[in-house]
Image 1 (cartoon, each protein chain N blue to C red):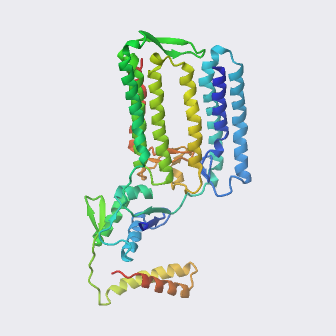
Image 2: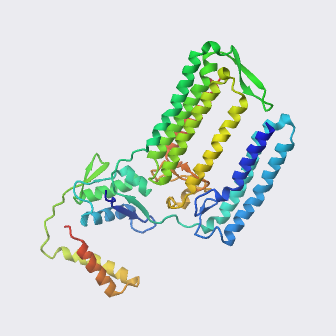
Image 3: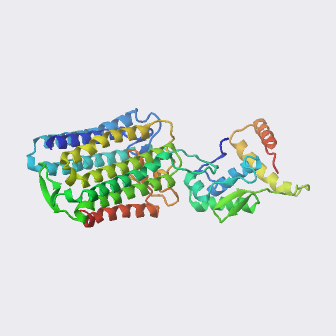
Length: 325
Length: 132
């Protein structure tokens, strides 16, 4: 467990340390900067100061993960990433404010095609049905083997790897994770559709669709696997490590796709970005726009559908209290 | 399949965005690059691609529909129609036109463009405008 926490914190730390580079070319700390600015004295200084703040915090988090007593490992696993995130957030905001005067207008001229070719989704969008099929298959397998499910089985494990919460064999206890997984997959599917139809045409829109479909598939496999634990006696470390094995390479592939050159930066007015992170433009009909902090897409918070999407996610999380054992 | 015609707008320009859109589309209509029967993107899609409000695109489409270039369907989609305008033979039209061109020429000249280059450009443009 300690090794897992150490690796997890190392991954989080490395990600935040590399934050100034994990962005579209032409952006530095969410500020659109002129070509060559990053390599100039102001750009280099901003990156150096950011890393001087984040680096020591990451090192402290790693040392604490390594030296803390075993009964505090769970607390460190939750607390250390938040500590790194807080330090990175503060360092980012300071640099964002410092670089804002250097901001340039992104693509002052906007273009649009007047064609009416149908806006069909790529073939791989059909893979969005796979997680639901996985969850249904798991439910069917559990139904067929109901008698083999133990009358009482563990559903929660402590940092020491030992179970600390048990439930009786019941409809809620057995099928609850599948219902919750289906809700999450449905949310990702809706988000994928919203991303496709609610953002501007670009190559990155396809990458977003891949990311959302992959996330839904991952959730389907994860919750299907969790539901089968009582029947297959899967060790809990598999449920902890397997997601990392899939998530880390998947994230690296997506990051590389988002960083590929050739796609011009999306034209969003600088004044509509709050702290370089939140986009709020009531005149822009787009629901999702390309992020300035990090890679990927973010919601246009002036669009009411953004709040409906977020409310849906909050409701799904809250429903966990009802459907999960 | 040939590429679809494109339009460009500059949100920083002093010309209102709805006018920029209608002006750019009108150029394509006059040049015959948008033939009768061609459907234009929906108001929603064009507004999304240009990052402007729906009403801005709807206003540009309405302007072109008023001029007889487009037929609006359900207020959301627009199709190019055959526009028949009788040729003006008297010279009454030329007064307003002349004033507009002179204002434009003065503006371009004040930006440092030579009279010769401007005359050549106008001559070239006149040749391109083939459709009534």
